[in-house]
Each structure stands twice: as C-alpha cells, then as structure tokens.
Image (cartoon, rainbow over all chains, first blue to last red; front, side, top):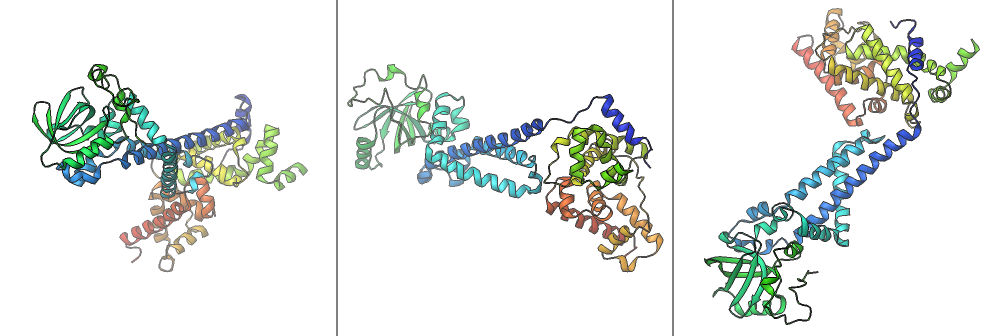
Length: 273
Length: 194
C-alpha cells in the first residue's frame, strides 16, 4: 500500500523544486515543429521523385540492345540509387513525425508509409511538370561533385569507351565524322560506321546536331582516341549543365570553329526543352 | 467535508483546470488516481512497493509539469495511464532481469474472465491449475502482459488501450490475441489443458 504521506510528499516536491506546468506555447511549438519537419520531409521526398521522373524520361532504354547489355543490367547500372535512398530517408522522416503528432500513433506503419509514398508521387509529378526536377538536376550537374557517379548515373554509364559507349560535346562535324570532347577533356575522332544508315545519320546531324551539343554514341574504339560510331543520339537534357563546367567548355577547343548560327551553341550550348 | 464532496463530483478535466490555477488542487488528481496507478505499476513492472512509489511520484510530477499538454479530445485517465506506461517502460529497461514478484488473486473474477476468454475455463477450475495460469501470465512478455492487464483488470476498452500505449487498434487487438494464444499454448505444454 502507498504510504499515508504520499500526497503531501508530491505537493512538497512540487513546491520545493518550484515546479510549474510548462506553458501552452511550449506544446504548441513542439507540435508545430513536428508538423513542419514532416511537411519539409514530404517536400524533399517529392522533389526526389520529380528528379527521378525527369531522369527516367531520358533513360535511353529504347535502344539498350545495342549496348551489349541486358535490360536488367542497364537498369541496375543506371538506377538513380541516390534519389531512391533520399526518397526512403525522407519518407522515414515523414513517418517518424506523423507518428509523433498527437494522434499519429493511431495509424499503422503501412498506412502512413503508403500515404506518404502516394503523396510524394503526386507532388513529385506536379513538381516535375513545374520543372523543378530539371532545375535540381541542372544545379547539381553544374556544381555537385561525383555528379555522374551519384546523381545522374546515366552520365557514367555512357562514358565507357572500352565497352563501346561514349559521350561528349561535338566540337566539329563534317560528312565523314565528328570530333567530340569527352567528360575528361579528351578529344575523339568519331568515324561513321559503314553499317550505319548514313542518310538518316546525316539527316539527323543536319536537323538536330549542333556544335557544342552533348551526344551519346554506341560503337567501338578503333585506334587511340578514334571511335567508330554505330548509333549517335543527343544526350538528352539531364546532365546538360554538367557540360558547362569549367574544363568541359574550354574556349581553346572552340576558338577556331566557325559558328554558322547567330546564337552559337558553343557559347550557349543547347539546353533542350 | 463539503469541499471534499465538491471535488469528488468534478470531472478530471475540471480538476486539471483548477490545478493550473492553484497547485494545491493537484492533490485531488493525485488522490483520485494514486491507487489505480500504483496497482497498475505493480502488476506490470514487477518492482517492489518502495520502487513503485518512487515511480508513481515521478508519474505525478510529470503529469503536473505537462498539465497544459492534456488534450480534451483524450480521456484524462488514458493520458495519465500513458504517462505511467512510459515511466514503467523507462524503468523496465533498467530492471529487465528482475525476478517476478507479481501475484494475482486466484479468486479474482477478472482472472476468471480472462481464462474464460481463452476458451479453457470449462476445463480448468481447480486451484492448482489456476496457480499455474497466474504463473504463465506473469511470465508473458511485458507488452502482452500489459495489454492483458489493461483489458481484463483495468477494464479499458481497445481505444483506451490504444491511447495509453500509443499503438494502433490493430496492434492492441493482435497483442491481446497473441497473449491468449501464448497462455493456451503454455497450458497445453504443461498438460493442464488438451
């Protein structure tokens, strides 16, 4: 049984230690912070979805057969792991914060995670349509270290000349081939393959390719810094700012090039849609 | 005497309000809940009376400190049981290896209710067998024992238990079912029931 003086001991302790109830604003602030952090986490998870959608739009899976890799291999090599982990992390933060709201404990893990993922997808699609996914990729492409290894693995995937994949900027072009500048600042002479549909290639080059434009190629190395191309495609907008980095657009590579257009792409590489 | 009658008629929420105005009124809350919470602590935490009293004192100090957090959308009893639950959990982590000291009254009607809900009551009515059941209940995992206690010995419904232990209703239901299954399994193992 509880001792008789228990009540008085409690009151005595409250008075001795001068304990006073915490103010209402303390709890209001605490609850608001929980909601705010949860909302911010949802914003970040949605942004990661918008970047993933943007990257997925230009994944190049339509001609994966030409890369000598299986579809599964291409997917594994180009999956945006960073953004997936980023998404999972912030979904967890959303879950944690919802659980710590006043009535959050009433909802199951599956329900909270399910709603958080669904909300991230809906907001992610919306942010993608606004263009935020593209904006984030542009900023990271221009500034982030390890961009190709971490943020946009397509970039790294397409820069494996030994395996027949090459990417870079066009620095000159004629009927026999192209000169390109790769991601490490090396120049490559690109010959058109005899098996290539030259008529279509030239049409493609004439209509779509401009000097200074980032492209990706499938083919093989024929000599040092010489590449025979079977397929040539524009690199696509993701990673476009990566080619703006100092070293990528070195003026000495382009100074002798005659810009045929008023708006020379070497000064302002085409940014795509 | 009049004052005593007066506070007995007040609701918990009213007592909270007057405690915020004058701390001496907090004693009414202490008086209303001390025995219930003391029993709850003793039954689920396996600590001696002295320690249970210390723990209960912490519960009331925390309750007073957080009085402004009390949400009218929740029953005050659920809220104060939740504070107690949290305090017991904190304490339990330190005392996990302590021996079992809990004893239930073998003739307690609530124990009979629990047994009847495990579908074994018809076959078990001797004192020896019921002693073993008490032992089995005491050996249950803390999480299972706690929900059993709240359901059968504190007469809390699933919503209140959910508010106290801060888990979804589904978790409460599954824990109660699991506890019943564990009891039945142990009874079969001990050849008390087949």
